[in-house]
Structure formats: C-alpha cells, structure tokens
Length: 537
Image (cartoon, rainbow, N blue to C red; front, side, top):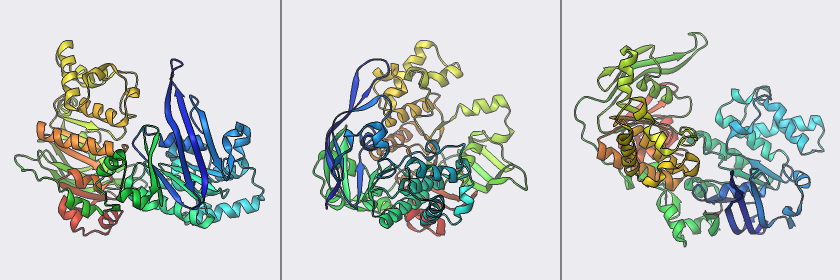
C-alpha cells in the first residue's frame, strides 16, 4: 500500500521541571502509515506511543519538543511549517480523537457550539446552512438518533460514550486525510468502547480516511487494524501486517507483550470463554461465615418522583478467602453497591453485613473499627495517591491515622509492604510522579494492606493499566490472596478480568442482578442477553 505518512528519524525529548536535563521519549523513530488503512500503535505505558501521536499533530506538552526528524504527509514535511502554518493542517488535514472526553470538551459550551467551532477554526468554506446539515448527518452517522436534541446539551449531560462519539464527529468533520485516535476507548466500558470503534470505522470508510489507532489493548488492535507498530521505550521494535506480527512475532518484546494477553493467541482474538478454559481460576474452599452479605438491598438518589434507583433489591454473598466480581457498565449500580459495603452510603432498604457486623447499624466509632478490617483500592493510580507525599508517607498514612506502632515500627512496616508488593525498598523516598502506572497501583495495594485487612474492595483496579502491567498486578493480587488469606470484592466492567481471577460473579444492569453464579457457569453458559453481549466483545 502507498504510504500517506512517512516518519523518519523522529526524536522527541521532555525537559524536566526543575532543571535543564532532558529525557528522550522517542529515539530516531521511523515508520510508514499505509493510506486508507488502520494502523495500530501498541506498547506499554512509557513506550512512546502517545508521544508519537502528539508529535504528529503538534500537541506536545509545553516541556516537550521535537529534536530532529521528518514527518511527511502526502509528500510534504509538515515539521517545516511554523505553528501558525501548521494550524491550517490541524482539523482540515489531520484530525485527532483524544483519550479523555471529559478533559477535551469545554464544559461551558453546548455540543452544537463546539461542533460549529471546529468548522470555524478550520476556516471551512461551507455556508452556515451547509455546516448545520453536515453536523446533523455526521451525528446520525456515528449513532445519534436525535442530533437536534444533542446539539443543545452540555458535555456533563452526556455519557462517556456519547462524549467520545462527539469527539469522533469533530475529528472527521473536515474530512481530513489522516485521523489519529489516542486510546479512544480506554476510559470506557467494553460495550460503549465497541460503539465508539464502530463509529470510527464507519466514518473512516465513508470518508476514505487513514487512521492511526493508539492502544494498549491487543484485542482491540487485532480486531480493528490491518497494520501494527510495536514500540518499546521510545523505539519501534517491530512493524508489519497485524496477522503476521501477532501470529509470528520476531522481537522478544512483541512476544512478551502477546504472552501477557489471555485474549490473543496464534494471531487471533480468543473469546472470553476460550480464554477462560485456557486459564481456569483455581477454586477456593468456602469455610466459615461469609465476609459480605447483602439481602434485598436498595438505594435511591434524589426524590421518589425524579430520583434514580441505583441499587434495586440486590442480594449477594461473598465467601471468605474468595474473589467475588460484580460486573456491569457505567451506571449499572456496581460502584454504589461497593459504597454500601464500605459504609460510605446507607441503604434505603435491606441489610448489609460485613465481617459479621450490620454496617448501617454501626455507630461512628464502630464503623471506624470495621474499616480497619476492610480497605479499598481505587481505579486510577494517578488520582488516588497524593503527589506531594513520598511512598513512605503514602503507605504509612493508615498506620498514622490509627496510631499504630512507633515511628521506627511504621518505617519497618513500610519496608515490609514494599517487599510484599514486589517494589524495591529504595523507592520509599520517591514520589508517585516518579513511578509508572503499574508501580503506582502496587503502592495503592501496599497502602490498603498496611492495617492487615481481611477484605479488599477492588474498584476497577487494572482498567487504567496496559496489558502487561495489568497481568502483573492481577498475578500479584492472586499471590497476596493466597499468602494473606484475603477476600476480594472486585468491581469491574471487564469479564476478561473476571475470568482470570474470580471464583464467583454477579452481572449487574440498571441496579439489578441479572445473572450470578460461579465464574465458569456464567462465562461458559450465560443465560441473560446482557451477559451474552458482554461476552461477545
């Protein structure tokens, strides 16, 4: 295929905040992007794939700059253009779908205003009436049934998938030759992510656009791209057709990347059921009183007339020493259920018992004592750790709060916990910004284990991580469970993760449990249509 984009010897560096030292993010990267195809760029966090995307569209952060190289679009080296000249390319010839729709859309402007703004910034020759007609048709094309109603709404009134489809519409609005999509589904549930990818493909085919898809999800790359670029530490280590690279990887890093994914084998994407049969979860012996018991629990937010019934008659049991997974899309009620377990919300009806105690009946001091025995690991390791504290301060924070041990004993406990989560003790004086995403999540796990809890609530603990890092964190959690006799209450939208670690699963939709049972029963013989749709992704 004739390339649309030629990148030759591209080197990009970032200047550190407090000195003049520069860190190289891309080192002499050279690659071609075939015209009319989807090229996936894959690699772990820190591999340089997002830096590559931002360099092509000239949206590097203020401390980043291109040292050398060429980026040719249709034969022109666009790096020779000044910033003002390059703006004429952005939008009209190069579209961009960013990763985070919340940060990328202006919360003070309606969707309609922001869609029209894209035409204004690109200096579109279309008349106002033609712009409105194109916007209406483009919104229909990406799956919005009522574009007129959407145009008057603000971003906060839309779901994550709707916001991302608005960004897709903006990226394709000027009919660019090239669109770069930077992790467009990483913040979305699996079904919503599938809708967004469908929207991108529909627009690509309709407008004959070349797409570069940045992703850490190997299954997404395998299913949606014809060509693949593998990056490691700022260097391209392998390129070629997806089928060839995934079936016969040549570079050791590519082989390790593919080995970390339970969903890709011999160059094809396995179903979740196939992956489950290949890596069946070990059963646990259920003994003693259940750690979590919910019976006919309901929780409403707002009034009876205008409120939302977030949890509707939910009953579930979590055996000691097991991993129980609660699966559902955003808005299904799974996070509210976890907050009821943690005592952060009070149920309107039903009973919530944790470690033998009725949570809603506990007084403040009693609830504090119970929380010492149950801890939580949140979804984003980037947001859940205080960037101003060292790892020593972060991990010892629960010990300080409960006044456990002397200063020397707390420091010894920090070292013990760093050993437990497989981090060097020398890291104790580092800050979260000096760590990778997977290392930060290990710190979050260490902090959660500081008080020696019996129950961990894991709220999407690996959804923000790359495939290889995700596999390592899940492996660590499994090892810790065996070593410390922990019980896990796992919140997730991904049945592939459930397949790897859970013994029991409940599928939640619109506040109700629609299916539950052992993981094997639910994955191999699903009965509910919604469960079947989750498994088909």
